[in-house]
Image (cartoon, rainbow, N blue to C red; front, side, top):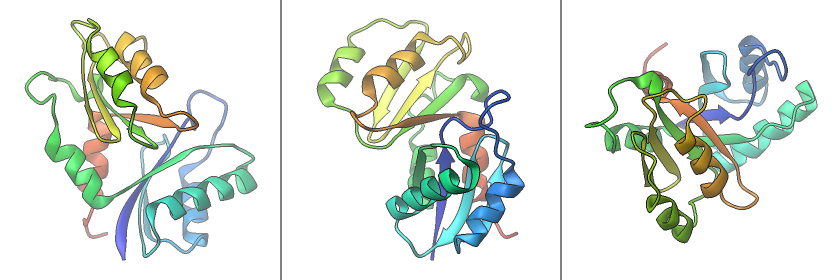
Amino acid sequence: MQQLVVLLRGINLGSARRVAMADLRAMLDDLGYEDVRTVLQSGNAVLRTGKKPDSVARAVEKRIAKDFGLEVDAMVRTGEEIADVVSAEPLAGVATDGAKSVVIFLSGEPDPAAVKSLAAEDFAPEEFRVRGRELYAWCPGGLQKSPVVKALTERLTPPSGSATARNWNTVLKLHALLDEPR
């Protein structure tokens, strides 16, 4: 059994597309996953399973569509991948507020030519780093209207792929739940 982190895209943002975390936990339990825990109200879950991350993502997406009538993308990472995201922290020397630092989780690696093109642009005082399927951004003016977050999600999300963002504080909360006894 391995621990997986499930990150749902675009639920519980405003009054639409609502999924109660108790209902999400019940659904994940019903799918046979173990030790299911949710974090915050924005579609984050930690669970245990012997299934592969991609299989879990597709099963969760299908079941959310069936149970809640919502088309939602699920990004799933192993506990080891989340630990790696945290230990890498390429903006550690720059980012000073976890609420203004974000990790964008992609469904696949971005196109290297698109990364190179974006890296040539000036987003100061914002900064970003690309590391595999994760994009790290520091947005000292906040995330809501960040030019770098908009550019990263619009231009680096793989074709037919998806992206979902979590601020650094949320990433750390998810990481802290890994291997934490209940």
